[in-house]
Amino acid sequence: MKTIMITALILISAVCCQAQNKLAAGKGFWVVESNINEPKVQTIRFYSDDAKLLYTETINAKLNLKHDKVKLALNQLCNKLQENKDYLDNKKLIALAFNLKR
Image (tube, rainbow, N blue to C red; front, side, top):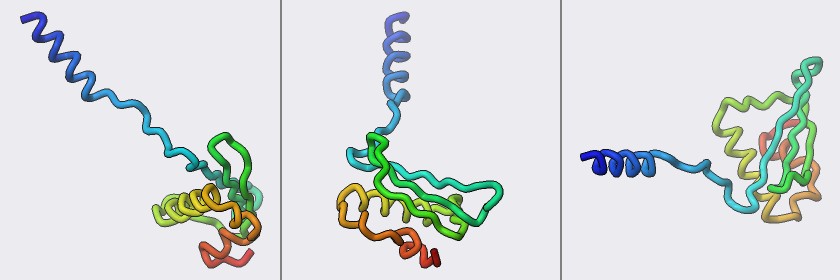
């Protein structure tokens, strides 16, 4: 009875425990920075997996990061920057993606 309980406990813990989901290789990440003195000005920076700066842009608008569409658009732009370095030449990627004036 004791061995059955121990075996069941090990199986349950093995099924319930999950490692942290790892990002796919080459995915990178982005950071949005703003200043309390200038809340409408935001700087968005895109980094590679090894924390190398790929692209940065400052916009005169406030992106609402609570909306999933905004996060999805930033994630897609980050993926495109990782895959294709030709995008790095354009200095208005975020303004174009969100139809903003710089």
